[in-house]
Image 1 (cartoon, one colour):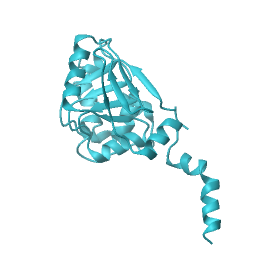
Image 2 (cartoon, one colour):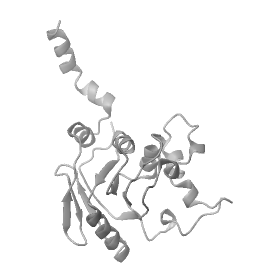
Image 3 (tube, rainbow, N blue to C red):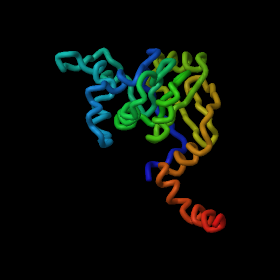
Image 4 (tube, rainbow, N blue to C red):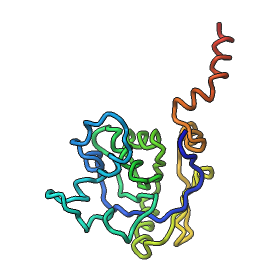
Length: 198
């Protein structure tokens, strides 16, 4: 069982880049690991942007800027494009992000995030722009993501939008269940259905 997802209110990390692909999220050289070691992948999230080729810290990259932090990553349009590697979602979760906000996600990456208890929230481009403006105006501003109501609110402006999520995935997130947990939780119902269909 994972941590249950209900309402998250947090400051945000802005990444106003479009077409961020999974190789930029977690470079291919880190895909040799076959087990999900969250710290390993989290430490290497956006590795080639966080560090220079000589291994030194790139102070200009947002994850290295102490001004910004929180459990919500606000990203530009078309986040998670490219290869379907689930390691990208592992890295985002391993770093500590629980929500990623964008105006568009690549479908496979969006599903990988959901499977790893990260909530992808799709907003309009106008709402996304306002979020970036608010974050840069005041890095301490907060965003509220309400999964039960399926709303996201910019607390700096008071504006909200509703987002869509698959009903099954919503149930799993709110109850801290992965697919196996869900099946185990419904074992009696499954067995009853099997017995009735014999």
